[in-house]
Length: 358
Image (cartoon, rainbow, N blue to C red; front, side):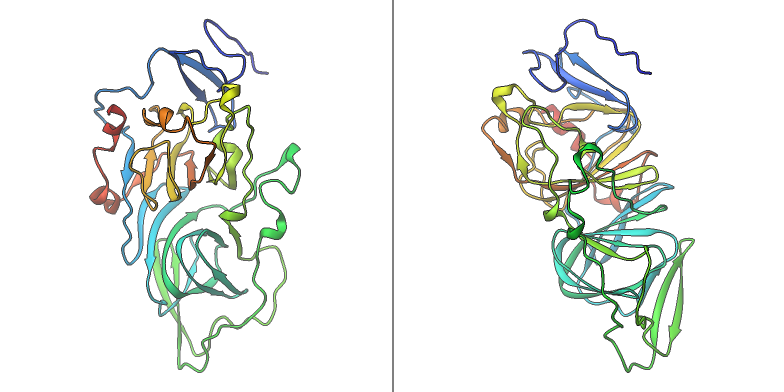
């Protein structure tokens, strides 16, 4: 049982009617799913003048190279960004991870052993571990890839009911259909296992399934079909925007929505927080990201657990006259700290942490 206490100056409701001259920090456990306190500071928790050490906010401007480039990784999840200009020669099967693709831009089709799925900007596509498939590129495709040691599960809706977030009819699954490439002399399948690739050659198209049944299959959901959870009188925590649950991490979708009601004194921008149990990765997909300065679509930020993060100073002024947000972003919150790849370190803006000092 929680023992709830309060002392000094505080608000009746979190994120509402914060006293003038004070800055609210949310100090939470288990991401935004656990116990929590709000602290009311006399100075912004991100008002630093210097940071020495590893716990800096990290930033990668839009950087798309041919193929997939790993950016972040730990024992539970790997995050990569990719640019596919042409249809690959081989089929692919990941025997290490379940895969979640997010289409940042581009169009095409994925042919799988379960059938075919077309894709376009804004689509999430889940590929269960062991699925054989191939991308067929119609237009140059920029793709976020998340590889998970566990399956991608739907969040529970609780008191909101089963049709909240998105209706199940928004999910698209493939109809049984064999691969379109026929009459070739050989077909190659690249299989990833224990980080290594094995090449298997067949005299027939391996996508030769005449039918299927069961509960393991690819599926597609558009970020534009997600209905945001919101309140005009309360700033919802990021956990309210959870799209997929995995072991030791979650994937959230921030989508366009009405902003909170200024007349009710509700905080419009994200609150300062010390999300002490989770690292936070954000991929900025589309729109005007008013809580950050100079963020372009296709960029990444990493905010490690242990150091405060929250809006840039100008964000509070920029949002005053806004009634809606048009931003779309994908957030990955990880229980274990994320490591950054050599590619990320070579291309990141190492001065990003200074942007809170302007």
